[in-house]
Length: 201
Image (cartoon, rainbow, N blue to C red; front, top):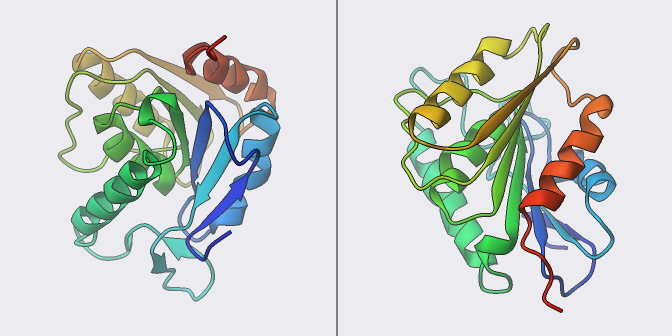
């Protein structure tokens, strides 16, 4: 463990799940979920967002309260550098990135432009002016239809943008709010197993 990430699972693995937490949370927020979804032979890494949250608890990828999100460009660059650095120990082609809320927006924006095996975006939203570029990894989106924080339509727009760029996407809605519905865990596991490369014999 270091200050900017948490690691779970085997020291060496042929598949990896990278987790990006939401606004005001921290690296430990999604770690239990990652361990729940991933098999025992999967490396799980939860990244800590670089900035302190303005309310004094948790972290943020960029300040959502600033008009036009001036910190977004630097946040994109830093996350890209961190994901590329992970490729030193395991190729990105063997990595799937899962993000929640602000972490989902970052995952789709940044990881979607890298040769990852797939991206899962939970309760996410598109960044202003974002236009995904082919080739794109497959994505799975989940979103509560009664989400009071990020409207369900944000994931519908993510899917529209992804498909318009030629990408493969699936959107799973559920009756709840701003969370990851445990009823969808089987679908999340299925996505992971389908899109991680098959282990070498």
